[in-house]
Image (tube, rainbow, N blue to C red; front, side, top):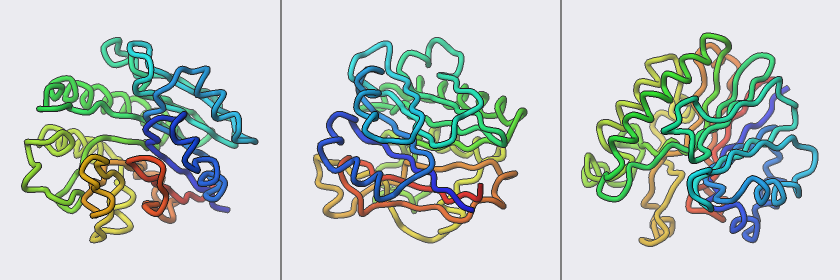
Length: 257
């Protein structure tokens, strides 16, 4: 029996709820739903997600800035344990990580920091990538790991519409960020969409202000990374670019349970 895992940067849970979010989730009917950039307090996020019946809901909201960042993990199966953040104060103020432990694996949802306008936050992002990579490696010593979310990086030229123009100039496509993603793969994680669709051009994020979605000028920065020990159970990876409501679209993973 297979189950569907879905991840989505919703760009504000209170905003997307007015744009067909519940209908989309009921249509997809995931066993697990991971959200990034909820942009709401824990109470506001929980209240909004209460409309999804039959799920356990876990929320991590930003402590530093109200209405900023934030993640949620919604699952039909009750986890063995749930933890929040990665254990470094510098990186644990913005509600960016939730890890759910199940019998056979960990599921981590992450909203990776953006390197910022003019790459002002690239040094912070580089430190984040190092510490998050160490955190994933630590989890892998205990059980296989699935990482999903907005990792804010396009790994290869095929993963964005204008690679030459953006390389080392735009957040999400600098060599430092590419190297951080590559280290996760070298550490035993598999980019599932690229595994199943090695030559397919498909994006998960489009800039609102440049009408990127209308022109399909986008980036593939939302990912499902799966521990190579679990890959025999992974049947397919999806990008649901027909679903709207955010500047990102949902991504999915079909997994034998």
